[in-house]
Amino acid sequence: MKINFDKQVDRVGTDSAKWDIPCSKYGSDIIPLSVADMDLPAPQEVIEVLNKRNQLGVYGYTIIPDDYYSVVTAYFKRHYAYDVSPEEIVFCPRIIQAISIYIREFTTEHDTICLFTPSYSPILNAVLLNNRKLSQCPLVYQNQEYHIDFEKLEACFSCSDVFILISPHNPTGLVFTIQDLNRIASLAKKHNVFIISDDIHADFDFSGEKHHIISSVSNYVKENSIICTSPSKTFNLAGLEISNLIIHNQTIRHKFNRLLQQLGFHNPNYFAIPAIKTAYQNCDLWLHELQKYIFKNKRLVKCFFAEHIPELEVVNTTGTYLLWVNYSRLGIDEQRLKYWLLHLSKIEMSWGSDFGEEGNTFFRMNIAVPAPCLIACLDRMKQGFILLKKEGLYYATQRHGN
Ligand SMILES: Cc1ncc(COP(=O)(O)O)c(C=O)c1O
Image 1: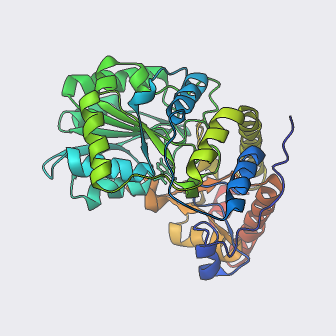
Image 2: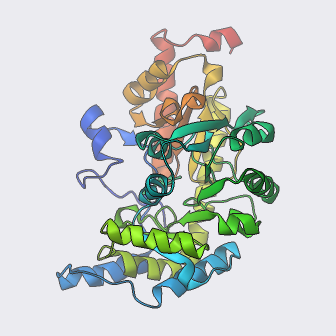
């Protein structure tokens, strides 16, 4: 099966968070490579099933049908070799809601929550806006790669109650090895730390292995964790608000389900159930093609930078469709980077400082776009860079003698 992902979809004017905000700020010729959804349509099978529902023209209340949970667990078994029983799945519209509910209802203002930094900012905010103490464990960047400083992690765990893992990691794209997960799990057990693992990017793991869910490595973690999963990144369904939590611990699960009821989360949106059932049951081949396409896009960017802007360093990680790019060798600050990319090149990225202090000198680039669009963006970057030099706003090349 060959799927054509090259076609551009015009999303301007659809109230798209990715397109309509930058278009209104910087003009309609801007191309955003920022917000983490894809400019690639969902599988045709999903589109057709939703079209059928749409044609009814009645958007009434929905239920979660009995077979829903076994569709979800079968997907986990096939894709992550993970065994979970249907009753251990909890539907919650969005992952950030689930994380915030846990923080608000299972912890107090005296509790400390640990995170790897840099970090996806809504998760940082879920901790800070709910007035919990934040313990930051910076990932170590060395030779274009990231790794965990386990000594630092242990020091953080010794005074933390909860650890929020993003696996694979956003923004760095780091895929945690089974050895990493084992060490995190044993430190969590030693210091009695509860784990929330956000596995929303699980299906974009290009390490060649199946994605490992941290609760698969430890009984302690199994009983003391919430694993957050979603089809939203994988099948480009973020606007349909579907996520599934794995909560093995019965007491925590019952409490969580009750909280969802108390907060009024009861019906999924009208399109959610048919979309995920179709995606999880019938679209494995589509996903395989998508993964190959994104992998090729990644190679394309790396080769382009190596040839035309070698100072840009794409961090060597194997997860997500987001590239984390270090621009420190350019010797410019974020303001000048934005001038180059937003104003001279007309491209929006996610800016490193939005991911915390460790994000400085990095930007995040979303490559889940049609390849012709990506090539156009790279060319704009190159042309903008020439202008930046012409305007006398970039001197590092002279210093490097290029
Ligand atoms: C790591 C991570 N978690 C959660 C989300 C958002 O999930 P939701 O929209 O279900 O809250 C994103 C979106 O980019 C993400 O990257």
